Amino acid sequence: MKVRLLAKHYVRPGSEVGSEHDVDDHLARRLIERGVAEEVKAKPAKSDTPDDSWTVAELRAYAGEHEIDLGDATKKADILVAIHAPPEGEGDGQGDPPDPDDA
Image (cartoon, rainbow, N blue to C red):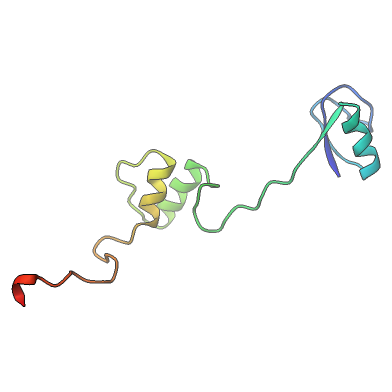
């Protein structure tokens, strides 16, 4: 289990406050119970498709690589809308609704 030291405590050479160490589960539980360490949780894997887990910088880079015009979008939510919008002129593939006057 990986732990991060919260207080000065010797685990192995280089054991400084804030340092992370892989230790066996028994030692990890003891350190956590004593309040000198916390468990380091693994970060979830980043999605291959742009979503909220991406940073604004990553979204901007993706848009640039895929020649997507972000317009005035500066916020993450607006950038995501621009990225996931259908390319201009393609619409939703349903075509225009029939004109009732043509019937």
